[in-house]
Image (tube, rainbow, N blue to C red; front, side, top):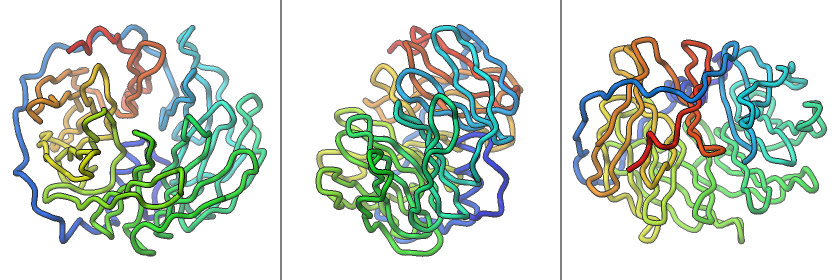
Length: 343
């Protein structure tokens, strides 16, 4: 990603702006034509709770709470048992354009410009470790089983594994080439680490047992390897950020892209809810965003929710029996009832 950007407003906004400097996925392999099937917009979903957050930006989950990183560089913890946001603390670390992740053992920030990964104590939010990683770290993900932190080094052409027991890089996995348009978002799922690399026109699947590449998956025509991933036992879903308006489906058994789904707008990182991939889709005409579901049976959009004309958001996640969604245009985080996402 280009470093000449302000701190992201949402995960989706960060990825979208960063792709302005990235090459398109030229040389992608052929795939089925994008499927369509946009549904009429349904009535606005009523949130269970709406929490005011000044200039909300990223949020991430450690499995028990949401952690927020605001556009002004402050961090706070949102308790799902009370729907309340704790005191927003000023980040005691340099942070620009890098990733944000949390685990019970730490809150993690990557700085794109200085090649540092910061670890902060979840109780005090003070920096307890500064870890040198690869060139221009961007995406971050924590493996919930091992606690390992995976760092996508955007211009380093690698993904680093950081051991939280020693605060050291213990492995570096080569993916793509060094230079622009390298690794973007990194996500852990199905026992693997997944990352998209535009300059290689591939998705990489890393085996954390051996810290080696287990599979390289060619990007289909209409796709772009830049978004995060959502997982079921039979499918991996990944959007194309602002490069295209498509969602790519990967078969994790064959390690092959098998479908391209037309979303009708730019999709942010997906989340699996009740067996279906859901994601926020940004309007192509600067209109309001919407929440979209894709059918894994038809590979088409089959459900759409609206949140009104002023909604702009992203950062979708599931926690404590609810679905959480950022609305950065209205400085709120919405808690949505899981029942509304029933098949």
